[in-house]
Structures are given as C-alpha cells and as structure tokens.
Image (tube, helix red, strand yellow):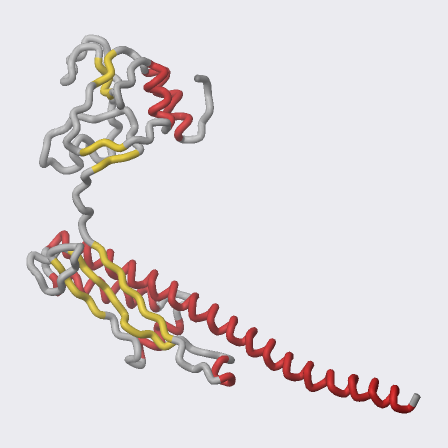
Length: 260
C-alpha cells in the first residue's frame, strides 16, 4: 500500500511542472497573437494613409503636371492622416525619423519606371515601419515591421466593357464628361415630334448580342446580360417604345422589384 501511495504522489507532483511549462507556452502564444494583431492593424493604417497620399498627389499631378506640387500635396495628405485618431504610432514614427515617405513618378503604369516623362502615375511608399511590440520581446521576438506601397494615376484605356446596361447617351468626342452634362438630368426618352440623332422611333436603347423586344431589354437592364463588349464593336439600337420593360429592369437592378 505504501508503494502505491508513493507512486500516486509522484504522479501528482509531476503534473505541476508540466502545467507550468504549458502555461508559459500558452501565454507566449497569446502574447504573440496580440502583437501580431496590432502589427496587422498598423499595416492597414499605414496602407490607408499611403492610398490617400497617392490619390492626392495624382490629382494635383493631373491638374498641374508639376511633380513638386504633387509631392507636396501627397505629403500634406499623409501628415493629415497620421494626425488622425488611432494613428499615434505612425505619427510618432514619422516624428522620430524612423518612417520615411517616398514619392516616385512614372510615365507608364505597367511597368512603373521611376523618373520617366511625361509623369502620369504616382507611387507613394514606406519601406519600413517599426511597429511597437508589447509582449513578444520577452520571448525573443522584437522586430515587427510593416511596409506599404500605393500607386495612383489616370485610368488605363478600356478594351473590354462588361456588365453592360442596354442604354446609351450620344455626345461630342473629346468634350468633358463625354455624353453627359455634370449635375444635370439626362433625358433618354425623346418626346413625340422631337428629332433623334439615332433615327425616328429610337429611345436610346441598344441591342445586346442580337436581343430584341421588351423582354430582352428588361432582362439586360436587370443584369442578365453577362458578356463583354470590345470598345470598337458596332452596336445596334433597339427601336420602339420599350420604356415600361426598361424601367422594370433598371428597378430590379437597383433592388426595387415591381412588375415584370
């Protein structure tokens, strides 16, 4: 009996160091998870600030063509984001010089070639940002860093257009907002007796993939047409008064389900 009791006591004593070792491992994993989550959050904050800075610089570059003015605007926007609530870590790193924002300009998007002319695209980047650690240094991890890059500039020329709505607007090439007037309501259904640029009986609706009639117009307006069109394709117009089906289709696309 004594030997059995002794064995039981030994087993109970062995559990305590095992629990202690396991507890250290669990605490280490929890500490690592907390610091890694904070690093991910700081990376997101840095990326948001870079996105805003690149867009701001690209806007000024598009308006002026001046890279110095564009870079100044980007730095101003970046600083404003660093001063926002929650970005204290980024702000402190920028103040002590451990975070450096760099702007580059390129004539092309892909490949992005720095210092080529005429400059059209802006790249804002931070090569290294030392993220503050709370617990991981105790376990030998003390080098959490983040980096980020953002590129902004004019949209590339479209070659294919998808998810097309069967409607159009005629306009004058090379004019601003080609086909539309900013801030004004566009009248697509022309009143009786009014001359149309696309011919009598047309209401600025188009045929997609050989479709015709009100049912096809309704389906396409609702989003059923999922093919793509090349920018140099010829598209036929859809004559006839199909306003009702078109309204039903557009309403469906916008989540308003009435009729049809």
